[in-house]
Image 1 (cartoon, one colour):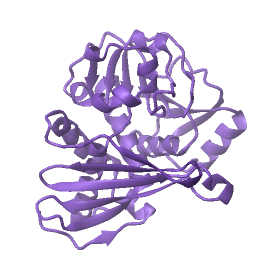
Image 2 (tube, one colour; image 1 turned 60 degrees about the vertical axis):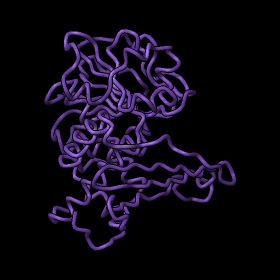
Image 3 (cartoon, one colour; image 1 turned 45 degrees about the vertical axis):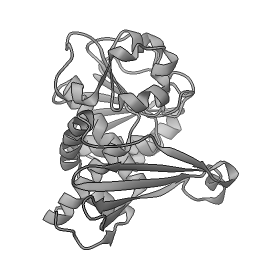
Image 4 (cartoon, one colour; image 1 turned 45 degrees about the horizontal axis):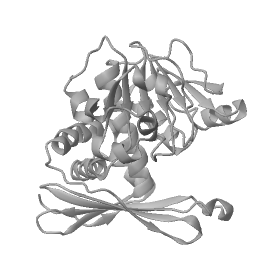
Length: 309
């Protein structure tokens, strides 16, 4: 690799360097490398900060690049009128250690997480979903809307919020996207929704319907053992996939609380390879790992090299 001029990208520039079509390609390759042990991503380190905040350290390396994501989560910032999450992803040439790029951390997280969901949706749910339901109205829901708009323009997307006014405001904020947006109050999902994506930090299930082969479930929001968006009823009737089966054992609260048999839980690489029965229900759980941040860094470097941003 020829090192590029070192650059620090803003949030908007980071987003511009992570177009979803290319990002999905780099993530698919990284999923196979990670499964083969060619990308190394240790468990994240958590350091306490004052006032209930935490600093999260997540490195990863491959033969071409190494990355280090540092993210600060400070809940008290809400009272200060500041974002609760700040951070960056620093990118280096693996062979020399030379710095190549710094990306906005929250933007990387939102876009690579949404892209992982899009990969799972493509692999497990069919080529073009006509009707998707999003449960949640936060940053991750926004990231998923941008991904759906870029990859599946024109489809119907139901946005479920706690209250109708919240859902309506969220849809209005994203009204310029080429999607048919429908605000919904509560978590009752339309019968024709072929994909349901949960994007909350709920401590109890927000989706409690029996698993069916006609509907793909994707759980994104719950990332601690105490959180759970998907009920045991939906989980136990499904073929299970986790983007990171190693991290999932400690972080996938939905599956942990449902006491799943982890020997029966497959990976994102398995889903992409088609190792499942399409006649049976399917559920994909996303917990995230630094390997996906490394894939995003590859995408940004490729984009910078080809001036696609």
